[in-house]
Length: 272
Image (cartoon, rainbow, N blue to C red):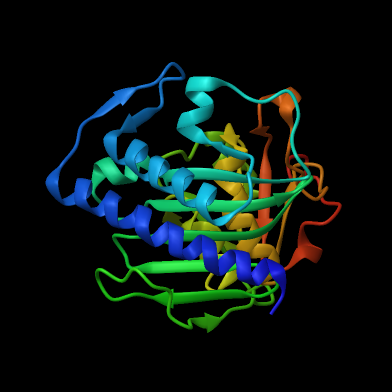
């Protein structure tokens, strides 16, 4: 088993513990407050992040960890280690508050400018995706805290028409216009990083996003997608790179494809 697969399995165990805490808040009810960027945060985000940070510190040697709530509080470092972790303890807070189950725990190991291992865990759905050298998916019984074997997953050749996953809470007119340029397609709304997992497991073909996202929003899902044979590209058709400290770890527009040949070198914002 590759080192990246070992790390992905470790990250799954950590995500399962964080997910258990999130589910407690989900069932008991919690209120959101707005951060300085007007995005919502809850006690579930904060408790899950604390669990993840403690577990990463225990299992890895002096890791550099960039986690959403910690960065909001403390800011970004001046430079990055060659290996570091990106953490979104509760991706899809709006889905969490809407109680539709489509929220995830995202943890990724980064090596320089690329995600090399990651986990996307949807605790309310009992669904987990992870990837390193290979990609896997498992449906978990309620309350599971240890990772089962899971099923190996791969992206599929693009279907005709394409199945396009749209953001459930952040879809814009510009996003819809970009999707329309892809040709014949069907659309399906889906929240959080689950979109990457569904493409990685061959249930959809592509997802586009023009609006602002952070690197910890996409890194874990991108790791799973890459392990399954897919790739995420910028609007110009270049492989999406991470570690963009000068941009505050903000992503530009991106497209995550299950069949990379359809995204490589393609400027999908200017397609007529």
